[in-house]
Every structure is written in structure tokens, then in C-alpha cells.
Length: 442
Image (cartoon, rainbow, N blue to C red; front, top):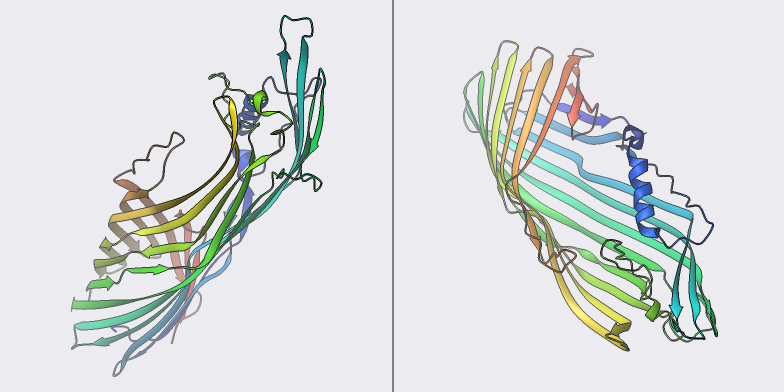
């Protein structure tokens, strides 16, 4: 409410992407080592492994990131509106033409006259298509009015629209060929002529959306022309998202994906590669329509001072609540499993609940400006929120405490025209690079 001029501001940043893999010389070797560790002793005879060619692109989505406008009338106060994107992530995955052949052999009737070698060959062709999109848009409305010459109050409302969309289709085509002795079996996946389920295809479908509304209250005190003291309260928000999740996963019991050479585990379980089980796949289905999103509020105080060409701002926020997702789902499992030496059919239904996020404890910011240049920094201390999450051994994962996040930026500002100014972040980590703001005052 102390502003005497109306203003219009636009935030924007350039669009770019870089192949960051070029900056990691050892990455190719690490990928190849992982491939070797999986297929060791399982390669088809005479075949030379073809290692995947990996590209890792990193960058930022450019364009207009935010727009804000304020209208100031000393008699009636100030009105403001702002639009920005607090979170935007777009990830596309495309895999095509990936194939692998694995083999295994075992000696049957060892030491007897009818000894023979039973050999299993599994060639697989894999293709997958996926997309992940997180799109959060926020609109803020505000009103401020003076209470005398040195004190003003403000009220605001924000509307946060959240969209989470993800889908993945993974298709695996192939056959199992088993020979040796009297055994001669050929089974193809996705065979419509068989009675049992023999697909290895996986699908992911996630679509959640919600609009969160919250309010804020503020006081600003200006004891001197060069000093501002502010206090702001932001209300926390918590909402159940609308939408659903469905994940369908198929696994072949004969393929042991937890292969560990040091532990003596095999990639193929020969005992499962029998006519009755050779291509019968187990299925796991995750279904949910429950996703709760918690967005923290805060209480913050700040001091801003000016002296000649120097400017200084120091603020502290005490977050209220946590930034987290609470997720519940039903898990349906059915198939064939091996219990000791017997194969049995199974069908289980379980309920699972997870909470993942951060509980921020402290947030401090500082900014110093001299002339056209400015330097700013932020430190956040938070605890990890993990409930229901377990490790590979089924043990609960202990959340980390007092995690420190930091950010910094350096930039400069100048006037393009009398009423038109531009501010540029030369370096801002982890914020957008070269983010710029155009401000027109009238």
C-alpha cells in the first residue's frame, strides 16, 4: 500500500537443453559395467553385447513464467494480481528396438547313461513409451490499504491448480525356447491361443488434479523512509485430489530380476521353466483414487532498508505444515509361486499407504543490492517425511532430519526507458538461468 505508482511486470527465461552426459566421461563405462553384471554367463554363445547409447538432456522450459500487475490509488489502496508456475516438469521417454538374448543350461541325470544338457534361450524385444507431466499454476489476488502514514495492512487469496499426469506402456515380445533330451518347447509371449496368461506388458495410468485455495494476511510498518518492517501469514492448505491411478505389472517367475553374482543367485530359475509354468506370468495391479496433497503455510517477518545506492533485505519464515503427498492404494496379486518344491496358485489383496514429502522447519533469506547489481541467497532446513516406505528387505526407511537446501542468485538491473526497467539473473541455482523481469511503472 506504500506504492505510489501502478506497475506491470513480466517474468521470462530462455528455453534450452544440453546433453549433460558429455560432461561425465565415466558414465559410459558405468552403464556398460551394469550391463555386464546382469548378463554375465548368460549371453548366447558367439554374441557380442551391444551396449545402449544413452543421452541425458537437461535444461529448462522457457517463455513467460509469470505476470503480475498492481494498481495503486492512494485514497482507495492498492490491488494486485499475479500468475506464475511454482512447479512444471515435462518428461518424455521413448525406447524402441532394444533387444536381449539370455541363455541358461543345466545338466540332467548327471552321471547316468541318459545324461543330457537342458538349454533354455529367451530372446526378448522391448519397446516403451512414457510421459510424465507435473503442471502447477498459481493465481494470487491481493489488496492493501494504509492505516495512517506509516502502517498498512494487506489481505490476499491464492488459487493453486495442480495437474499430475503420467502414462507408460512397456511392451515385451519374445519366446522361450527349451531343448534337451525329450524336451522341445517353444512358447511365445502374447500368444492368443493359450489359456494361461503369458504377457509381460506393463502399463501405468495416473491422472490427478485439484484446485487449492488459500489466504494470506500482512502488515507493513514504515517507521522511517528508509526502513520497512513486514509480517505475513500464509494459510496452509490440504486437499484430496480428484482422479485415479492404475498400474498393471507382469513378471515371469522364471526370470529372477534380483540377480546377484556374488550371492550365487541365478538369472533363470530352471525349476520354474517347466511346461506348466514356462510362460505363465504373475500379475500385480495397483489401484487408487486417493491422493492427498499438503501445501505448507508460513509466518514470516522481514526488514528492508535503503541507504543511497545500497539496498538490504533480511527475512525469516517459520513454515506451518508440510509439503507432502499421501497416497493409498489396493494391491491385487495373482499367479504361480514356488513354495519349497511345490508350485501353487496364489491370489492376494493388500492395502498400502504412503506419505512422502518434506516438513520444512526454517527458511531464511537475504538480499543485498548496490547500484545496478544484487546478490541473494536462501537457506531452508527441513526434515524428510516418509511413512509406509520400505527398503528392498522390507524394512521401514528412516527419514532424514535437518536436511539443508540452499539457493543463490546474482544479477543486475537497468532502465531501458524512463518507466521501463529490466532485472536479469545472471546466475541462479537451482532457479531458472537468465531469468529476467520487465517492469513498467505508470
